[in-house]
Length: 183
Image (cartoon, rainbow, N blue to C red; front, side):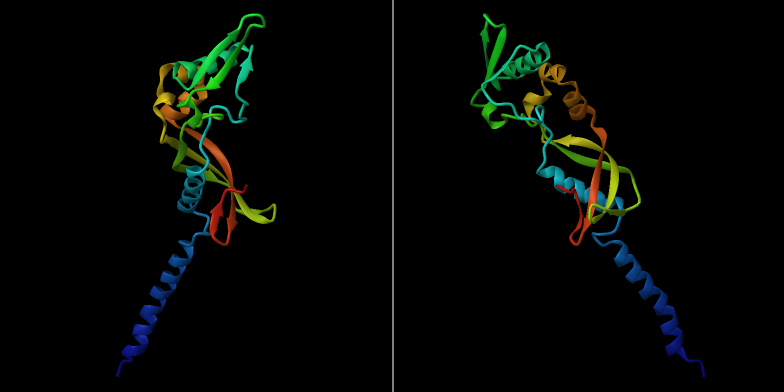
């Protein structure tokens, strides 16, 4: 008489093992493109890209022609007012009521990962397991003023990012809660 009970056990054991392996591979700490995408998108929701990474103090004065062109584009978009000091050939910029919402850094949206292009094998560094991730992205929640031709001409890197997206790299650290951008 055949032992059907042991045959069923033999058939079920590989299924149970593969289920456990699959669940382990889907943990938040696994080095997967999905986990990296989630970690980066969570980070970017609270870390916008900005025109002026180092926030100037307003009123802001400049005699530099490149800075003047950039600030003038923000003035044309009604985010700044401009006063000139003819004696010293300087322009002074102050945020308008609308511009105060974006000043002093003038953030223009946040990145959203389109694809993980590559990543290094996770390795111990700085007290954590880390990986360097290369990703492509698009920009989300771009305000109307950042889409204007004058602002885009004055800030070509922003124009490229908001119209075509880009590719960038970021280090991620593995924590108990999953992958995160170290701060």
